[in-house]
Image 1 (cartoon, rainbow, N blue to C red):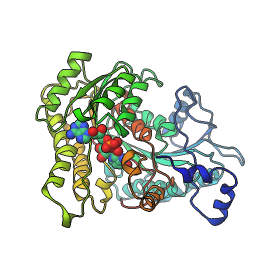
Image 2: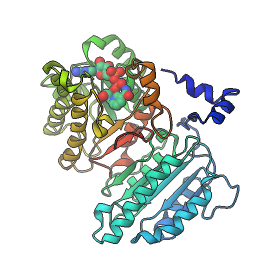
Image 3: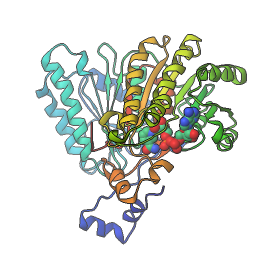
Image 4: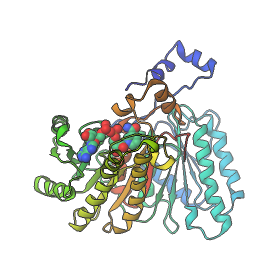
Length: 445
Ligand code: NAI
């Protein structure tokens, strides 16, 4: 699962050769380390409205060095561009050129984050155009950044201040190493729900989380990350994976539940286990998933039905049970694993893409049924370095893992960090959405 090429091109003597030949030179990503700083270097804050000043005050309160004007050879660790008040595309010129002037000095692993409003909330055509223009600008800029730097945006619903809790939660996530493989994406804050995390280092302290498919791969990484952030973890997987499952659960001081999630009463059994052993359930992570790839012309009922049953039908049924049994209170969180295949489609994966697109539809529709203060979202990983992707033939794998703005595959922890953020109290105003963790895939949507 190691990316040997990445290691080689980052070390002499091959680094120079790769540069001369114009080969992809993926950078080591800046990832989160508990106890480490939120960001290296100052934050350049661009924007002139009240929102910009309010955000500057917040960043200062986080202990960051905030500068409002770039000077040559200053090395910002991040550029935050506050464009909440733009109502015409022609107003973008000044702030955009201020960003342009600082880009060459952005540090490796740096961040560009736009803070603006959703175009869908605008009634004036010029305002909607300006807001969509910010999205086009940011997505293109993210493709241009190098050195492991990323660009992402926060869309704050009309009527909410740009300093609303979940906008600040999203900003902290996007500035930090937790978002290393999130690139070219937008998070929308839909309402004022959400409360600040009591402890930035242990945002999930006191919560009980269940992770399905936790015996290995991304599920095991999610279990470890939620535990690191303070949660008590219930690890669920099929009985055949019992030994690996017990090892994950024991390692984290959590509990293991052997269960096939396609069982008709899977949701009720998870809830009973959580209440029995831990007294409550706060976070559900629907991670278990399978692939049964075949071109549609060769598809059979067994392959189609199995993928739909595990990847989407089981989640729909379990969610119904959690909601019917009042399984999740205010502050409850459901996070489902989708896939970029469910957004862009993928040859040989009609069944899988249908199931993962289904997940995206499900979270959008279930948001309205969640109890007040509770949320449901999806995370859509792109190419992640796991046992599954290690089995892809070499040439196909090399192409797949380089075809994103960061020119490398993500790690299971990158997906887990996004899940942990959406599980946090601070993300309470973000619901019904799908966050891609794909390094900004170049192919597809
Ligand atoms: P994996 O195959 O390594 O692990 C999946 C786990 O789910 C296994 O431990 C398996 O035993 C468990 N599982 C399968 N069916 C189950 C059932 N009926 N009941 C309970 N547990 C069951 O997969 P990986 O790579 O860790 O993927 C995790 C999730 O992320 C999946 O939903 C997958 O579709 C999604 N994903 C993965 C990507 C990747 O690049 N690896 C990319 C996009 C999405």
